[in-house]
Image (cartoon, rainbow, N blue to C red; front, side, top):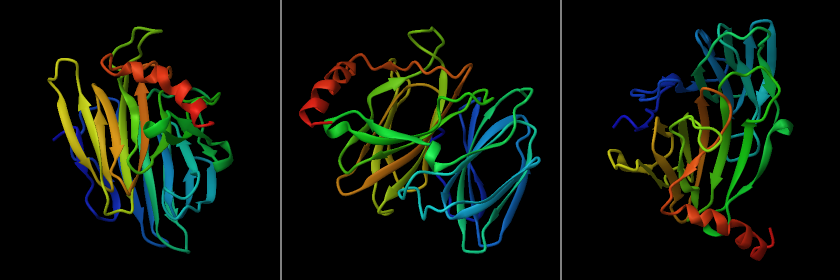
Length: 275
């Protein structure tokens, strides 16, 4: 199945086996204590999000020393590093233990003046989207920014036990601003406790894509097109790192018209909940 896969349990840079997206790509970097991985962004811009542990990132003339600190993605806001195209880098796990880093990337042009930069937890915006049983907490890591970023938009979402997320389902298939904007998107999932599960749906109006997948720890949904939504099984919290890329950095999602009316009830439900 090209739209969904579970990453194997192995060390080093773990890449996707199949990817229908033309702009986006994803890999998970798993390092043992004191281990170093070196590479180059090539023709892509990249965001390194520290999922767990501490790492030192050297990129170009920059050095970001011992960033991170979460034991896993469920414990606080992240540290992250942005790298422009054509940047050589190294990532080293600290002497204190192993580390995990999500590598989100998108095909991008070299932009004059673009440099590597650090995003600290204090810079990550957080809040709640939705209401009732489709309320979920988010972290905006790289959304609104004045820095020289071409395509990437990056964030995290936490969907509580039994709740829906990315709801109502939406798509972003074509540039027709301001009503719609083309964006590819990838979701990287973690589940707490890790033996739990959730469900995700991906479908189109014509139903040429009409899929449901069992979300497990370290699974990935690749969204080149189609409506998408997620739900957590009771007793478990689902995390997903989401990142998008299009022809610009304007988001204009289109809701599934059959259920999009639910979005109009959010304000009323939040007032009833005292939010």
